[in-house]
Image (cartoon, rainbow, N blue to C red):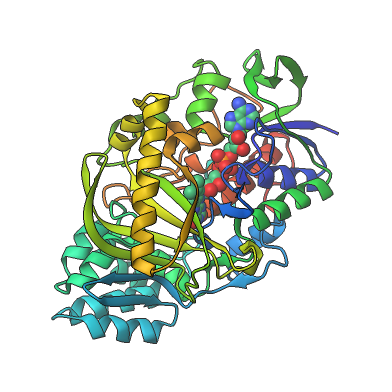
Length: 486
Ligand SMILES: Cc1cc2nc3c(=O)[nH]c(=O)nc-3n(C[C@H](O)[C@H](O)[C@H](O)COP(=O)(O)OP(=O)(O)OC[C@H]3O[C@@H](n4cnc5c(N)ncnc54)[C@H](O)[C@@H]3O)c2cc1C
């Protein structure tokens, strides 16, 4: 039985591991943390589960290719799926607009707030209906031929071209209605993204292909791990891989915690920068990948600053909300709108009457640098100052008590998974770069395959799962096996 070593037990590593185990390989994952799952995880704080990954999960609709991958890797196998009434709710000047799951309700809600925006609204609804389900290409790795499963057709292109050529921030300005405009500027989709990405997310939500698996990250993670183990795979935790062993241009194994482990193939399922700069010791051409870092306009990077609280407040069916607040300064910028995510909709995440609420702030490259330049004391002071400010805002907004649990910054995310600049997905998918795919194979290095969200813009759980599958197909191909039928 040929042996495969995978570095990293995130979604990509577990997915490629499961496919390869099921195809007769001896697969071992080496993971630096004391838990499997990478970003797909939760923290236990003061009796509460603080979920740090799934806000939305794409691929929940049965019959889609992505849903099949989530079943093959176990992630959504027999999972209960929660479809909330609204994608998000936006409140300003005493009014709230809801982005409903029901397309007819969504349409009438938008018209209710329209101020001469009827044409824009009609176009938006038309595009959502036309997109229906947009599948990520996932049949075969692009290195092995054309991925022809994009469901683009002339009608779809005509109805979505308008959104491909502008960012969400540009689209927002097309609306006269202040509430619609500001809702788009402050939606759960970063405004630097192409408007198309926002419309696609809304379409997936409306069509039941983006929803919330009960138990969120912990549930998906446990099912992924279970599928991998029952298919015969092994996970080694607390294994900090420092190097890929290379002999004559061939990957031969890894060094972890100073010990050599040999294998026939190596898959790196962790961050790309970490792979090239640390694991491969800068010996291979990283330029085709690295070029993306240098252009923050074309490829903006973003992350999150998260403050978590517990509360007895009942948010009812409101899971993602955004409010206009009295402006406050953070990172030398004015913050006028505040995103609040509540988790009481899932009873498995509750403790008695308590549920978790998170404040989410989008951060950029400058914010990362700001935090990175703080001393330990200044960093703690920063977190402490803002947790108090946001706690007061929450108490005022909801007239209830909120107890601080913890906060997570891009620096936390970097520490968690060695992710470049604390990014939890790749760069934003903008009007200038509507997509990209980077090679899963490294030129000049045999028996080595990359598998992670960084290879396809904009990353996220669906990309991580799909890329895990495609990476396993590449191993089958390199080993002369049939790679088409998985
Ligand atoms: C706050 C937050 C919110 C998110 N919201 C969403 C969302 O709503 N929808 C969505 O689709 N996605 C979301 N994501 C993104 C999603 O979590 C990621 O896209 C996905 O989990 C990435 O999986 P991966 O396997 O590519 O990488 P990772 O999860 O980064 O896995 C890489 C693994 O490699 C390990 N590793 C690194 N270096 C080493 C080493 N030297 N030795 C051994 N192991 C190593 C890491 O510890 C990690 O376990 C969110 C993420 C965060 C943090």
